[in-house]
View 1 (cartoon, rainbow, N blue to C red):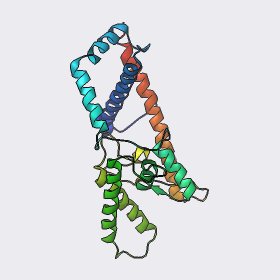
View 2: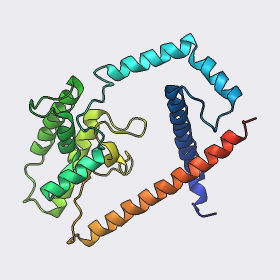
View 3: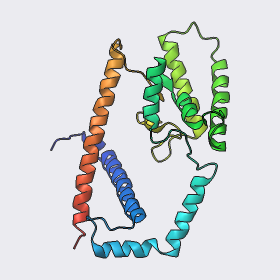
View 4: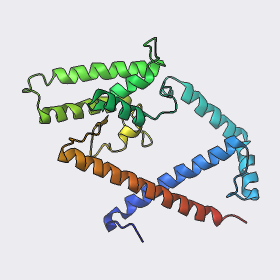
Length: 241
């Protein structure tokens, strides 16, 4: 009743909804499994069935394999950011520096151990090293460009983002390695940049418009999450005794 879209977007919206709802339901089941307690929205009969499934050899082997993958060089996601998100680190860095910060800068800030200047694992070290090499090569190919201006800076931002995307292998399951929420507005089809612009009272009209669009998108995401939860609750209620 409150949200409308064009008919040609129907299929994509349904696909996005089911993908997000499936991911959210999996997280709810995971939390219940880790806690070892039946949540009040889940019937006892279904809970016992899930316990039997989680105790099967196949499921345990699958969990063990996933754990090994997460601990491997390719699957590791270690960082030094603590409980603060990548996006929050980007906000603080942008405020402290008074300029936009790019994903590689935030990545270095959150993946290098304080005091030793060593990366937390081999994957993060190699990722940043490969990115730096790739960016240097790309910039050297555009050295003949005129004196930097707003347009050339924007082009460099796009090249910088593309170098990071190429280095980490693009989006996987909706995420970009090391980018956190900075990748929320990036898609392979529309492009975008992986950076955070500091808020300023002297923001240009384009920056104000971008901020408004980001706020609108976040409001829409919150609305979508509420709708997902309501629909998920209704779905679960249909199978409860």
